[in-house]
Image (tube, rainbow over all chains, first blue to last red; front, side, top):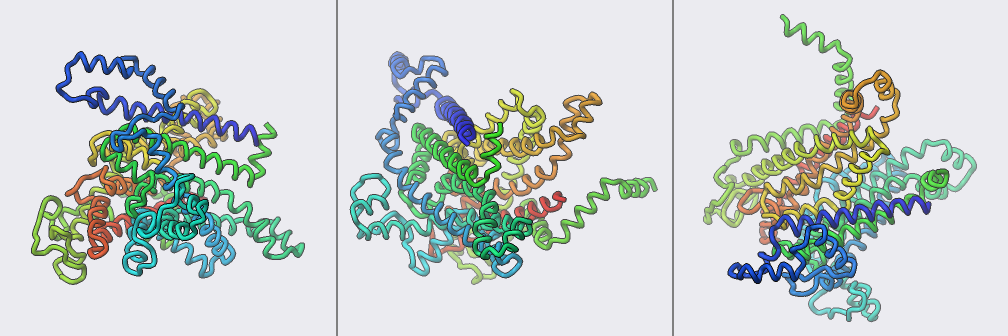
Length: 339
Length: 296
């Protein structure tokens, strides 16, 4: 188990370093000379040369990358042309607000796919199964940003059940910042009204983020259950007179969710990408929306930071998924031990 | 005469027989047939949109303010309504199919061949340095959601349709490499590969004549499913304004433009959104059908 995780970590670290090279090349080399982009076009060549020397841009490219990487590890992601602040403080300010949304969406996805999947799997080939099948086709064919618009149109504009956009209602004061997570901060400040308000605002965007993955995972859980139902160990457990519920949840569900957990991990990780669109629809003041605004203004340091931060979170989610799968699937654990 | 005899020979060949069996399997599922019909209809619209749409001139800068903001199903000239410039939503949505399918076609024709070839090479040389190099490079590209890096690339370069296609292509090949790698590395120790090796076949022959034909099923399935996903990413890029630019009738751009007129003029973004959903649904059903066709 430990070697397995260590090896996964090694791969992830390697691909993150590769990603940093890629993004460095993308943002520092492709757009052109950074010094010329910085200064007035009428600046004299001597001053440009001096500035180039001062910024270390006259050094070879690999040296520049090395200096830049050292800065990144020190937590210095550079200066944002768009917000006129350090990118690190932007990331720290906006990232928790996005994570709040993604975590809520992830929880909804996990809960929803389990409920739907078990419902369909235990009533295979009956109406709940067909309903989940239809839902999964609808869920997969409508992209998350279209779901966002549909939900906004129906539940926010037409039925007024949910707010149309934003993080908090205008009459609710923002809780004092402790962690940056608005929901967590409200709980720390004991402001349950603010907490409820954040969740109320986050429900529709989170639903739009998770609905596609949720219906897919439900299908995967369902087919796993249907496949395993005919196995002999289930027949044995049933013939030994074990309660139906125990057989269902302990013996049937556990092996059936392993493939779903892998896909769920990938879905949750890719929510970070889809959040770019959903946050735009719901004007959610998170990291993705900030990054989109920075992209419009070609704010290169913020773009680099966005890719790196999302790559890091993506890697963390993938490692967590691997650990959960290894925990659920003894074959993976034992295989590593045997080696 | 000769042609008929050729057809007879084809009919007797085992390949034709297996194709006939796969088609039988495919045609048994109504969902697969629905997928085939929907995707064929989408491709037809995509190919012939400029000739069959009611108002081809509504594609670009066109305005007819007298007919602006007509609700759908009210006016027989504009069944799906019109936008703020009086352009027909139906026309523009159908033209959007053209852009979306072109994007999918360009991206997939660029990425499938290199991805598959790299995957085959890495899979055949499993656990050797060449496998390590290829697959670790793939890992780098797979380390972020494809949309994020595509957004970053499009924002660094000039945002337009061409760059969007290039950015998505750059993000897409590793998935083919990985898929082909998984399938071909499992086949590495099969008897037919070993037999070819013993007989002294060249690496080229083994990779392309022995292993590749056995990987076609999953690759074809993925290509079909990916038509939908590439269109999704492309429309997402144009939705945030980093892909196709207005007044291009791209589905994502239209959804975004219509979003400014929500909720009163919902049809401006809902019909293009429906268009995206129909394309993805069609190619997903077709892809599922093809997958079932290849599984024993």
